[in-house]
Length: 88
Ligand SMILES: [Zn+2]
Ligand SMILES: [Zn+2]
Ligand SMILES: [Zn+2]
Image 1 (tube, helix red, strand yellow):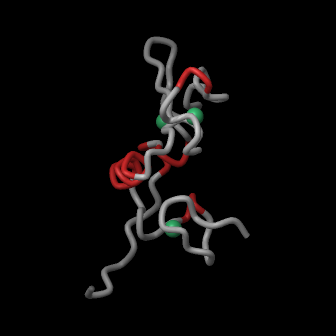
Image 2 (image 1 turned 90 degrees about the vertical axis):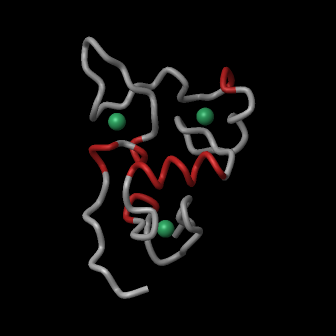
């Protein structure tokens, strides 16, 4: 399995990350890693014009009047349920 792009964990997929479980913290994480918000790859964050997904709009939250460009993993509509508090 590929590493989780958010926490580098191996036991879950990125989309199921329970450490970075909502779109806000996921975006911050991706930004702090200097990754691209559209494709999550580090290589095009500096020159976004080379991004293979630069014109791919989010299919979940874009509408005819408003387009959103971000990776599905970062979409507000795709946050997983908050994990139950474990005390730490
Ligand atoms: Zn993770
Ligand atoms: Zn990109
Ligand atoms: Zn979206």
